[in-house]
Image 1 (spheres, rainbow, N blue to C red):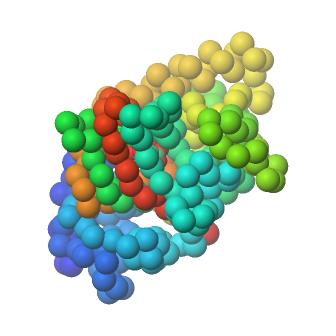
Image 2: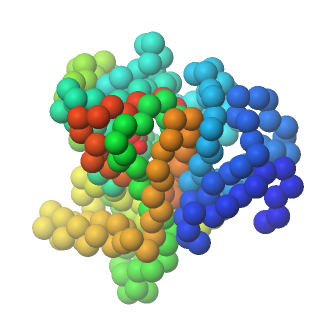
Length: 270
Ligand code: SIN
């Protein structure tokens, strides 16, 4: 793809790209937005530097991709807005969001298109990177025998594994629980992805508990291969947006007791 209105520099050949020449606080032209969307679909996670965004500007950019999603029972909604959650840690934190390989809210019947994090504070002495892993490549590098074995299997993704406790209020409505194919097809690219993650997936339906645990452990080890990953070092004003349908992410909590703070929105897969 040749880009006319933005500059796209890949972070690795398989996943991740930095985008230059865009001010996200302004209304983007259709051409500029289409190119950003293409870069997003091609690279699975895109990054921007040196942005200054109000919550409304971040939400407006997010809405260009689709309607915003409300996280079930969020721990830290910003100003009570369920569409914006604070990603926050400091010297009092006992836990952080996302320090395990996962994709977001896969317990939903239609899991989100993606999430967008705008970083407002970074740890003073470094750390706090986010890692991303390509589930296209995780799928494509399985052996043919394993691909055939997994085709047709389904797994349960359970919101109760994630959205209960850890400082959250008691959930007001039942938490979602959904059965998804283990190998899922990305709605827009048509490519196959490995679609299980350690945070939400409880078990593979067609296997015994022992078999399911063993197969999932093997798949998680495979999915976390460094060869499918990129790693982003945040600065104040960085924006990262990941395609939740084909990328896993892992927020590295190596900076305790320092502070890290950002605003995250999530976009529905309409
Ligand atoms: C998350 O959304 O899982 C957290 C991402 C991060 O803190 O980098």
